[in-house]
Amino acid sequence: MTQRTLSIVKPDAVAANAVGAILGLCEEGGLRVMATKMIHMSKAEAEGFYAVHSDKPFFGSLTDFMSEGPVVVSVLEGDNAVERYRGLLGATNPADAPEGSVRQLFGTSIERNAAHGSDAPETAVAEISYFFNALEIVRR
Image (cartoon, rainbow, N blue to C red):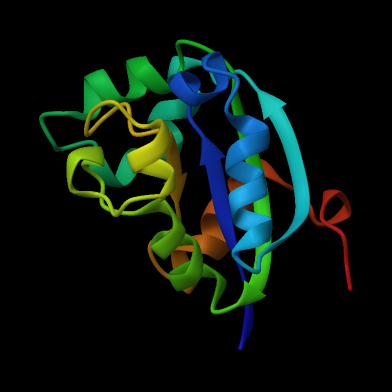
């Protein structure tokens, strides 16, 4: 089933010039980039995006990190895009991620793990609409 998912190349990976390599792994993994842009989230924007985690102890450090520098947000499309992209990302902790996965290659810690991906199709819809309007996403 064709679906869409959100990708965020996080500030650590943007600073390391890994955007092209990460999007390349997505394309090699069977996903198409339907929209992409570089933004610099404010602390409030990061808090809005990660509001689901607002009661967690890591919320402050996560939103500080996500607003410390530019990120690249993308809409990826393909068969089972959510599951496929999460497989390409690997485990949240780069030390546990499979060889050749995005987080194993570019992540340095659980928080600074290079990229974010939606965790479910319903979440993907909400996350995509947080960053993109319908006119910004290519229709096939």
